[in-house]
Amino acid sequence: MNILIIGAGNMGTTYARSLLASHFATPDEMALLIRSEASRDRLPEIPNANVHRRPAAFVGQADIVIVSVKPQDFPVLAPVIRPYLHPEQIIISIMAGVSLPTLRESLDVPKLVRAMPNLPSQIGMGMTVFSCSPDLDRKELFIIQNLLNTTGKALYVDNEKLIDSATAVSGSGPAYVYYFMNAMIKAGVELGFTPAQAELLVNQTFMGSVHLQNRNNLSCEDLMRRVASRGGTTEAAFRVFDEKDLEPGIMSGLHSAYRRSLELGK
Ligand SMILES: NC(=O)c1ccc[n+]([C@@H]2O[C@H](COP(=O)([O-])OP(=O)(O)OC[C@H]3O[C@@H](n4cnc5c(N)ncnc54)[C@H](OP(=O)(O)O)[C@@H]3O)[C@@H](O)[C@H]2O)c1
Image 1 (cartoon, protein in one colour):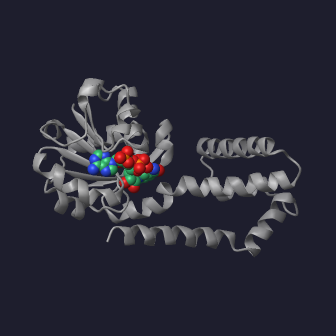
Image 2 (spheres, rainbow, N blue to C red; image 1 turned 120 degrees about the horizontal axis):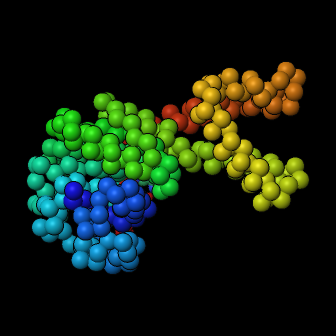
Image 3 (cartoon, rainbow, N blue to C red; image 1 turned 90 degrees about the horizontal axis):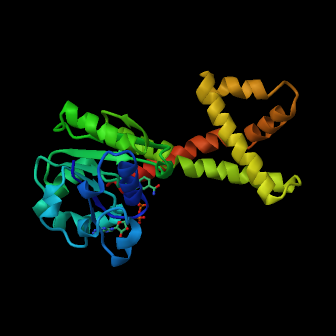
C-alpha cells in the first residue's frame, strides 16, 4: 500500500516511523512531501528518491495521503496538491480544527478522514480519535483503524463534533498531565527533595497509578477513596483542592479548550 505523508515535522515523522516499525508499509511504499530542504534528512529510512519538495504525479500514486502540516499552512498546500488527487485515494488529516467539510471543499475528493492524535503517539502510546466522510467503505475504515493503531489506540466516532471534544480531552491532555506533574515536582522540592528525586517520585507515582487503574477496573473515585483514609494526609490535601475549586477549574479549562477548537475550525 502506497502512503504519502505531507509535512515531516513531529507528527509526520511519528507516522512514518510507526508505519515502518509495524510493517504497515515498506520504505519503498512510503513517500514524503516536505517544504524545506532541512527536513530531507529527518527520515533517512525513506529512500531519497521518494522525498519530494514539489507536488507532482507521485501524489496521485498514493493509496493513502496523511496531511500533517499545521492548520495555518493548509490553505497554501491545498490548491497545489488538489490537481493531483483522485477520488479513490483516502486522505487522512491530523490538523487540529480543520473540519471534514473544509477538507472536502479544499481538496475536492470524497474519501476523507479527520483524526486527532496526541503526543504519546511518538512512542506508540498515543490516543487518536477519528471520524470520516460517508464515502469510505467498511474495509477502508478497518485499514484506517489499523494504520492509526500503529501509534497507540484509535477510537472511531460517528459524530465529527466529538473530534473537537477529543482535542480538549486527549489531544491537549498530555499537557494537563505535565502541568499537574510539574506542580507536584515543585511541591516535592519545597518539601526537601532534589529536583531529580522529586521528578522520580512523581513520574513513578503517575505511571503506577495509571497502570493500577487500568488493571483492576475500579473507577478513579474508588481508587481515590482507597488512598484517602478519614482524617488522614490525602484527605488534608483534598480539602485544600476543594477549597481552591481545583476540579471545577480543571473541567472549565477543558471546556475552554473545546470552545477554542471550535473557533479554530471556523
Ligand atoms: N504535536 C502534537 O502533539 C499534535 C497533536 C495532534 C494534532 N497535531 C496536528 O499535527 C499537525 C502537525 O503538527 P506538528 O507538531 O508535527 O507540526 P510541525 O512539527 O511544525 O510539522 C509541520 C511540518 O509541515 C511542514 N509543512 C508546512 N507546509 C508544508 C507544505 N506546503 N508542504 C510540505 N510540508 C509542509 C513543515 O515544514 P518546515 O520544515 O518547512 O517547517 C513542518 O515540517 C498540526 O496540524 C497539528 O494540529 C499535532
